[in-house]
Amino acid sequence: MPMRIATYNIEWFNALFDGENRLAADAAPSGRQGVTRRDQAEALGIVFTALDSDAVMVIEAPDGSIGNGRSTALALEGFAAAFDLRTRKAVTGFLNDTQQEIALLYDPDTLSARHDPIGQPAGKKGSDGAPRFDSAFRWDVDVDSAPEIIRFSKPPLELAVRPRAGPAFRMIGVHLKSKAPHGAQTPEALTRLAIQARRTQLAQCIWLRRRIERHLRAGEPLIVLGDLNDGPGLDEYEKLFGRSAMEIVAGFDGDGDDERLTLHDPHARKAVLQPVGPRQTTARFYIQHENRYLNALLDYVMLSHDLCAHRPRWRIWHPFDDPVCYATPELHAALLAASDHFPVTVDLDF
Image (tube, rainbow, N blue to C red):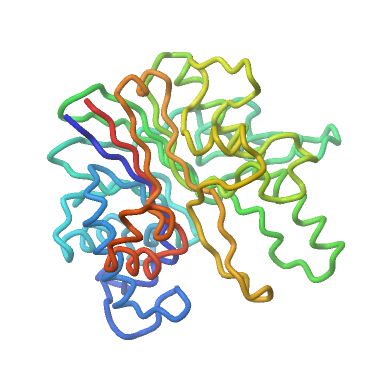
């Protein structure tokens, strides 16, 4: 039985819902420049219908902050009902205060999924092991012998997934910290903030990687998917730290990688092996001061070695690079209107 798993970062999905978690598909502006809420909502309906996935890890899902009446699950399930999607059940994990949650929208007829966080909670001083993702991790990011306290602004979503047909597996949805030096007013401040942001991001990757290795060493099938906000060769600071966030998370150490402890994604692997030249991308951002678009590989679906036995077939639903997306006018336009990221899917034969 084939199963399709997707990850999709939806830019300011939260802006499409009112305070009662209802889809507001009207003529008001969305969070996307020059796109109305109606246009973005309808575009998303087209994309989700075309994906026809059994599960979609939604990155930047609608707000679910406690105390303001918002519910990520209610918003997503209402969205699914509006477009008659089979991915009509939502599950969330630890919520955050960024208005950008991580949630899984799935088809309850083909699988079940429950939030199943691993690790012990850590106190204010943090832990240097692999504490629960809503806790704190202690790591010396600036090599001054004084460990910093690292937290996830968006704690990864850990799920126990059981397909109706096929093996049970673990799933971790991720949205790592952006490396953008927000707030920099001078070139010196830009450099300082950029280096600090990358240090924090890489500390998050080390924390995440420790959890991944725990599952892999235990022989537990695992999918790690989402937006890592990084990939090989994306900025000039990478040489300072040796490896990109993606390489740390996947466990790419070199030619002698242990396949049992490595996560597999062909787009990620190709980016490492071919650092110069054309590469596939999953996001497209407009750089206003340069009057051009920047394309980047940021979104991944990574599989443990045992899941690779199920004939995985990856696909980036890029409106220009995927021939079917490009040749289907309605889908092509919808992908461009829906988000600045494009979905990534993997098909598995269970």
